[in-house]
Amino acid sequence: MPRLDEENFQGNIGGTGFGYSGTRIERLDASEYTLAAILADDTGSLDGFGDMMRELVAGSAEALCYSPRKENLLLRVAKFSTRYNKGVDEIHGFKPVLSIDPKNDYPVFDTDGLTPLYDAAFSAVGSMNAYAEELNKNYYTANGIAIIITDGGDNRSTATMKMVRDEIKKAVSGEILESMITVLIGINAKQCKDDLEKFKDEVGIDFYIDAGDFTPSRLAKIVGWISQSVNSQAQAKGTGGPSQNVNATI
Amino acid sequence: MIKFFTDHFFCIGSDHVNKNIPCQDYCTSGTFDDIAYAIVSDGCSGGDNTDVGSRVITLATAKAIKENLSFDKPIDEIEQDINIHQRVFSKDIANSLNLSVNDMIATCIYSFISPSGGKVNIKGDGVVAFKYKNGDIVMHKFSWEENAPFYIAQTFDRNSLNNFLKRHNNNLDGLRLEEEIWIKKPGKDFEEIETKKYSLRDGIRGVTINIEEKDLLDLEFIGIFSDGIEQMNQSTSGVLDFVDWKNMVEKLLYFPQKNGEFAKRTIVFEIKTNAKKGSKGFCDDMSCSIIRIEHTSREGE
Image 1 (cartoon, chains in turn green, blue):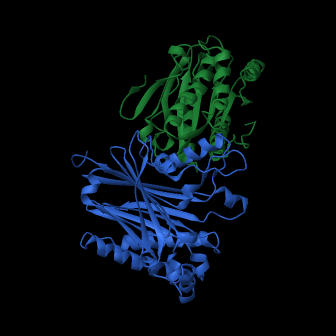
Image 2 (cartoon, each protein chain N blue to C red):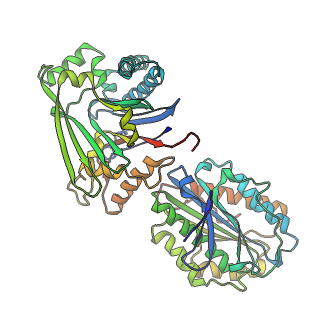
Image 3 (tube, rainbow over the protein chains, first blue to last red):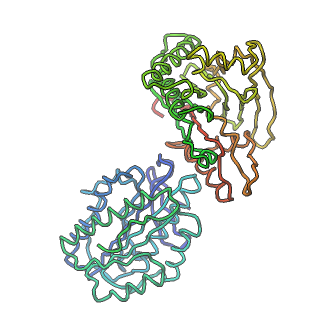
């Protein structure tokens, strides 16, 4: 049963114990939305990159405020690490990008713990499905894009690969979302590239993108890529299918 | 305290898509100064650029409403002034854009409402519905003999008016416009209340439905629809099988959430639900404008 406060409700992903939150449906004025979920790595292997991870998510949120479809964009941002309950700590749930304060809404990442990659992927896609189901019940329509940013393969997730695969299949075959794009971005991930590609293939993630070394110049490119890809998916809303304009490289 | 909210939506019909004709319906709605208005217009598919005509008529009517609505005049006088200016503005804009009468032949239904009451004015055909807080829906369908509705633009010149009159046997007293009135109570079947017939003269003047101040206490939605609402094709084969217009009205006045684009959400939901079954949706263009009436017990609540 969702818990309520004035602005948001908290829900569960299919009784799994994985939670999410989102703006209360009655506060959403449009008829259709693009749901974007960004799950960002907050593990010990990114020690020293906490500020940059913060810049990455805040920069992406800020860029989306300039989207031509900004009135129809809902963004959820979370961090993942084994030190969090169920591997995921939500920074904010699905909320209109125009209500986000990029300067103040995003903390510096503490970068500690191991990598629960399956938890992150399950949370990203599952939260989108669960929230979209609530939207559908109230006659809203939605499409989605889930972006998971990581520097390593899975260490110790609660969720299984099957759970992730089933959520991805459910997204489109269950007619919950008009379309869904899932992306895994690897940063500083040269050594686990093969593992991440394998994970992508086994669960059905659309793209694995190797973003190379996590440097300030690459950060700007990643932010630009996220913004452009979310915009493309937002503009594909209503076409019945996913955007054909999401680049496979950064 | 009463607050008004509005929403509107129009969509192209599959017949128009198949014939490469643009959507010839248009609608708008809005609120200002404790007043709400809703307008729909349906361009004649036998005309020329009636996609433009329906837009001109709608926007001219909106201008007429905004410029003539005042709390200082009796409501009947307000309606008269709106009607006069609706025609004047429509004709002026048509002339300035060199639009012919054939571009401008479009129906128009409009509604305006204030805390003291309001009106619905029908020139042409279409459907008007009132949904009450207890779930009752009273619906009015207007249709013309020969499927030849009156268009305001037919009064722009003598020839057009004469042709229209001739179509209706040149008899201003002839009963050429019919209004079916039905009621649907929750859990019960549709029940016909009455069928009224109007003379050609009255049809040209426009039919008015009055909304009294006391009606507002129980009223939740005023919906106005073009006659495209009669053509939701539920067939998945080549045969036409339309959902009964009364059922469509009931579906299109159901809003799980009543904020923002509430009308658009419901219409899109119905179109998509039918599409999933293989239907092509509305055959004719369909437009809909809704006014929602919200009562709060105290100011600020």
